[in-house]
Length: 436
Image (cartoon, rainbow, N blue to C red):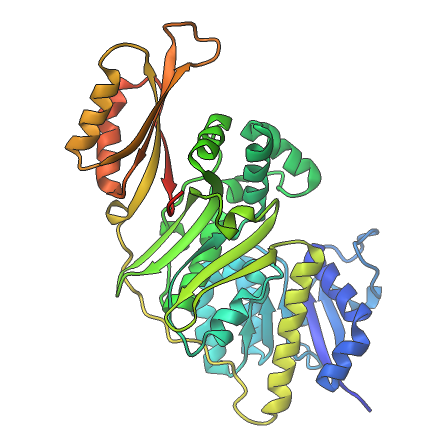
């Protein structure tokens, strides 16, 4: 008889339903690959009597008791798909304490409580896998943890939030305002009713914390990662970006400076000929530069029912292989020992910058801007002065756009503080990556 592998699902929302569907639709292929058949033994849900679900399941599998679900003797692997932090943390730690292996898609949980969870798993001798927590269906976690195990990642950057990428892609393609595109993204299901975590950079910061843990072996306080949202961008910024040979994308960046770690989340102008510039809509991509391999890039669906479920089930299969290969022995996936490496202060970050000033159209203003920037060691590469803003009249404000050479962020911010007295609206600051 084919051996069965007991699975407990915590949550039957979008991803949980995808996991059930994938296990059913690909049952024969998965069983053939494993020599064992994954069987869903129990599903923890918020409301057992809900009439309509995304996938049909046997009502006898449903329970509202998380603790009893994770403790079942016939369960080998617990898949945590409920989201959030505190309830998920308790459930995962209970599963680990009960000797269950864990698969999670919860980036907020790992970014905030990962150190505690991995230590508990190490002590108990069980696995914790989390491929779906970053970039949905793209196997970046497996690449970083296993494919590049003999290499050393020096830096990486990429697009890890599909909502933000969809919004910026639409703004660039059609010159639409942020608020209009956000509303459409909500109607299409790309953005939540409360989109704050996505558009503020919070979601991307959680994922960046996990990537930094894997790449640089450091614990990271996700809340302390410097981040700028995308909600302050205007259509005019996209027009200037195109004029200069750039595309605006929502970027996460991590770099090891030999002990100090640079991490940041923000929209950035990138050259329009870079591969990352062609990542459309809600897609994700990660560009990695490592010591031995050099550059490599990973692209695909960053979210969605089936892509994310595929990553969850792939983790289930990997754990099942570990169980089969090391039955009765030490079968834990060893988690990298983490240090707490100091963060590079954001004031010491060096970048090029796009600065858009809104000023009164009168003599001496441009000279004042360039003088202040020079006094703060910010070298100017290019300046464009626009006509008065539409509807403002001949004496209305005009946009002065400055592209800088590489400069220290603290110097740029100090100059902007001085210039604040000479502008009629807050200065728009966008970091610029690479040559046009």
